[in-house]
Amino acid sequence: MHTQDEYLLKDMEEEELLDLADLFKMSADSTRIRILYDLFEGEKNVGEICEDIEMNQSAVSHQLKALKTAKLVKSKRDGKSILYSLADDHVKTIIAMGKEHIEE
Amino acid sequence: MHTQDEYLLKDMEEEELLDLADLFKMSADSTRIRILYDLFEGEKNVGEICEDIEMNQSAVSHQLKALKTAKLVKSKRDGKSILYSLADDHVKTIIAMGKEHIEE
DNA sequence: TGAATATATGATAATATATTCATATGAAAA
DNA sequence: TTTTCATATGAATATATTATCATATATTCA
Image (cartoon, rainbow over the protein chains, first blue to last red):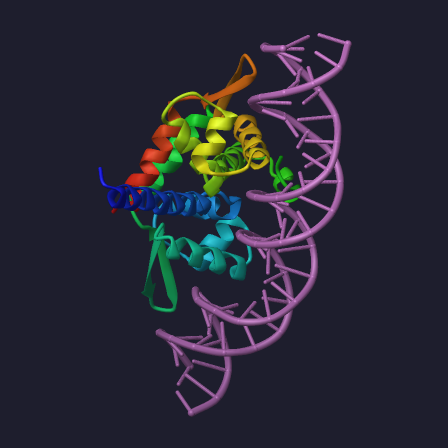
């Protein structure tokens, strides 16, 4: 393999590792994991999430933004509210894996 | 290991969520994820890990301790060295899931 | 249009976390 | 033993992250 290819491969792996760390960071905070877990039940607006996890609106909005930037949740407007939901099934799978691990 | 407000929570499910957050915290740091990824190749001593991930010995030892406390890696003595390895297959699966997610 | 409601955001302070440096420990070789 | 090598650890500093407060924005409804 050429030096350049090795460099590119290594570089790509590095970038992937950083992205991975960023992804796991999203599940690494108890507020965010509560939000994700809450959304397992389905689409919810910000107010509902706040009630469910007993956190104030600003904190929740800040974390929802982080989750959305990380593409773990998506949102759509519904009248006055914004509805949030899980972006895909990997989120559930990752959390399920984690649960399996700690349950041993 | 949990923070003060986390300690006040009583519910079993809540407790599980906290443990989950702690687990994911371990994969949420690029140094730690490099170490884990490095150990995908098999058992390695601290010096080898340091070389592989290009980090100094003290930083690596500190993170190895965190990973061991979280039961993501295990260690055993081998002469002068300490050999570290992944504690179980869930670690690989979790990271594989994460990779799948970001590769989409 | 203006008021009411739902959500987002910027700044700040509190807290948590990671890295570095110096040094300690512990096993093995001399 | 004493020395050397490999790893661990405590303290301090640097950095990142989070929750809160005040306020901004956007949508609906009177």
